[in-house]
Amino acid sequence: MLSETVRPPSDARPGASPRTTRPPGRRRGRPPWRRALRRDWQLYSLAVLPLLFFLTFRYLPMLGNVIAFRRFQPGGSVFGEYWTGLRYFRLFFTDPTFWSVFTNTLVLGALTLLFCFPLPIVLALLLNEVRSRALKRFVQSVSYLPHFLSIVIVAAMVMQLLSVDGTVNQLLGAAGAEPVQFMQQAGWFRTIYVSSEVWQTVGWGTILYLAALTTVDGDLYEAARIDGANRWRQTWHVTLPGIRPTMMTLLILNIGTFMAVGFEKILLLYNPLTYPTADVISTYLYRVGIVSGNLSYAAAIGLFEAVIGLTLVLSANAVSRRTVGTSLW
Image: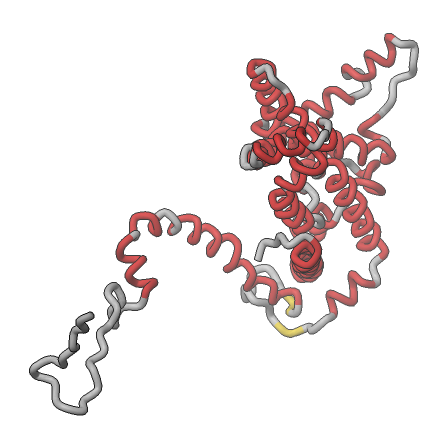
């Protein structure tokens, strides 16, 4: 068997180390992100406007949080006149009104999360079992429609339905019951608010779960049927684990907005008679900061609320990553 003799190049010197060649496609000079930016600059240009939006309306306003530690006077410096330290934080920590609105915020946030998070999952699972495409499209259209209504229109509809001479009280009168002042009783406000939130948001939240259901492997259902699993077992052991990443992601996002209970709707629906259960941190900030002009005090409360929201997001993300293996980062 003949073997070939590998000879060095004619210009190589005896004893010299062989010349190393650089792998193709890896050239020195421009960093990889610059090459990607030059190659796909049209795609990256689409992100310019969203980045400008968040920079202008989300990040730059954070500089105004400094007035929570400084005395701000209208017409003076944007960043306050003089340093006050933690004075405004001590004020609202000792204010009974603040703790009342803080409790209302926690209760309304918990009720909203309790009902508005699982109901879209239930509706998506039910729609996934519907075989009639016409019925499925009809239910989807009816459930999505409230999301596109303005909050002002939704609040007006709620007030008209629940007024003393509204539709609900007319039905109660036809049944022989006395009319109920729903909008003037503090005990009814939480039920009214959570019900309107469910009606307005559940259909829209179903879209993401229906999209996630399309990614579940059909072979898993076939294997479950071969093992004798009924529809409930298939849903519990195949469907829900398949959409679990989407569920956990939306849960973390909902927990992040736990303290930011809907300001616009509450402001339109509540009145001084329902303050004991309807007044939340955002509406209290509006009255203290905008109406009363105490912007430094309002900034301190808003910063406290933001810190709690950030803590909730970080905690929920860490718990989800350790227990389920799904997280936002």
